[in-house]
Image (tube, rainbow, N blue to C red):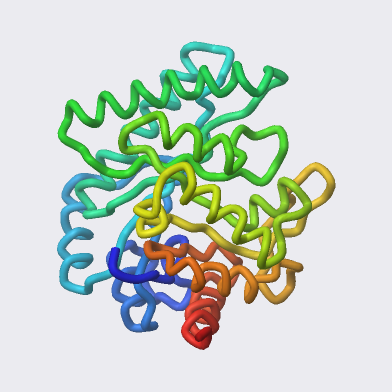
Length: 276
């Protein structure tokens, strides 16, 4: 992408009609640049609706991404749960492609008491099935496991960067608030730089030109994420985060998941533009 776009996780609250099409139009009116289609309760959008979404996306120039269902665990103990998780990701990618999205994200799984290396191997094997299936279908969307906010969830930024280096069409979705909540650190300019440096060192500068970012305020405990907050109600040092982004000249999309999604998205965009 040519710039860093800011936008909302789903339809803005100020949108009169709660549809993806009207959400895209409202995002454009607000002066934002992207929207994430939320399939978190299931992929229920029909192909004809997705095609109409793509028409509005093309006419407005809004960048689209999609978030897969929450009910995904590529490290489940039961084969039927893994098969269902793979199918949910495939469904997300197929409809997202028709919508004109360039990237999808999801929470990939849980450790379930398994050693981290073993969990990684299982998730990698199942991710390869997804990548191979989509490639055979001619679907070239970026498939992005998201960094997770609890230690019980698979998805440290190091794990996801490693997976991205080993599989085609896989890249990270970095949720900076999740990384902070998961570790109880990663909340300073130098620590934000450390994440971006790790991405550049392992995936190349091209990865920094193709970022998919989530951000929100988060209440957390020693066990990790509890729930989302508005940025100014949280301890996330978002101005230092924005400075790190600016210094690395990253490009891509920033999806705001705060409760006041469009307000925080516009605030982040405004603060980012202020930075020299």
